Image (tube, rainbow, N blue to C red; front, side):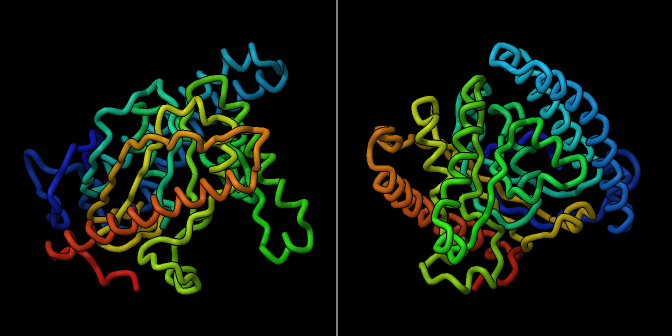
Length: 335
């Protein structure tokens, strides 16, 4: 697996078995997949524990000395620690994984720009793929996370230290019974985005709100073949609070031609190829609107723009899968 993303690559077949002798692949590639998965998981854990110590120490100082002046000093250091963690993950991925990476569109990105990032969501592997190809090319990705994830051991505290916004998820039935709860996620987004305003940040949102599965897809009748219907609530709030700061929208697309993997399959090196496409887009003028204006109308405008973007992404995924299938590497398509 190459750490440096390639600018453009024609579809490639699954990697050949590791060779021996001079010029061979790293020896973990020759391990049986379960042993390779255990090794990769251990390296991920060690890398996480190594950098979380520094992260928690800086976060504790920031907690004890609140204020924007302290934040301006400490937040860049917290982001550097997180970037070092991601670089460590890229190192063990390169060493243990035979995955071929097909990446395009990341060459002209700027590490000091402000980006609003959207991406399709299929697996926990998506997060590692995005971090791998974007680390130090753009500011650290700050994800919108489900509130329940704050209880994930070690990582939940790390996400809190890095000011990742934790969002509550209410069913439509619950929102009808308690309309006031609709504001909870939006208020959390507003508070998080206010913190982001101090240093260049990439605000990342999986706008589908959940991972794609055939069962979830079957419950929707909106013409999308490979995506779930996008939700504009959190994105609309991010645009409202930071819209004028964003230099661009970064539209990311991830495709697994060999089939969507579980995280364990990824650790075991059972992902032949990962395709990532990045496209820098200009945010339409006026999307952030007037803060004193009609919030519902503004959200409808963001929803219409996002739905059109998602339709184009669905067509892009269809084309990438067709290209891979023609090369003999794609599984049966999503119904």
